[in-house]
Image (cartoon, rainbow, N blue to C red):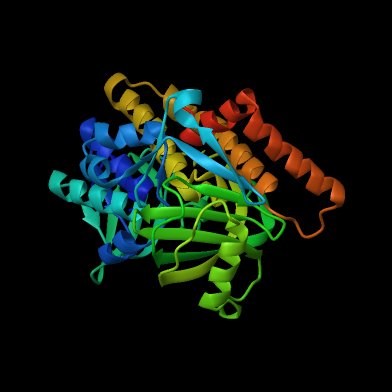
Length: 388
């Protein structure tokens, strides 16, 4: 097969890149090792930044999001049961949209198929070759047949556990990472959330997050030990802890648990995000702790930068955008990493913290919730910095 851009991975990054390229008249082929059913039903976070929601609308996949998504013009920060609202409308006049990532993926897949662009599911043995040449190749097996895609460029959108990042030669990548000494125990439940906006709750017992997938489906999280066994948490124990960490600020209704599991917390970045004609985007290049809700939004930002660079290459024979891809993306990636780390470290209890650390956290939270300047700083980053 022959195409201009070979895309490995049909997550938000790969699917959005394919749509952007289609609108620019650039051909692409997507290969994905999972099934369509798997990627469309894989539950992930669903907070979409202001600019990213506009992007989905602009590229023609935002109709369902506009109809079903929930607009949030603020968040609540709880400090030992006392709620303080950060008003995005007043501070920065922007919003975020709550709409499940799997729903975004469904709409992007449908759009891709309607466009008639190749999208191959359940491929095996994917590998990349000749990435420093002008004709890099993707090899794989599909439906029992060995196949090869001859490309101008390859976009590695295959996630943290994909094959693209490990395909970089030894010594090329610098890795920056931090593991956190706790995880999030998350549940999906048939019950309304305690507030129509998110509640980030700092308590002496640990952090909790009260969010939602719809007005009747809640997504709730508890800080727990990083090596905690989910079998140690009965439904009753989870609900009891969620009530305690919410305090009396809002009423929490219990419902049937549809899902529960434990998510590790880590920060991860590789530099550079490119080698030859192989470009990394999304989770293949960086992971953020979920406190800042930046994962899918960063993936969209990466491929927006890449699509602009490819458009300039094909239409104007300009290489500067492609050469500067890493530098352009990493500026924004590190802003998001800093924000996600900051949100994580002010809201969570740490195993070896001192009395000084506790007082400093409470002082940070008090300042953020009482100072218009500090609240604006949080709001500006939470709703999403522009992609330049």
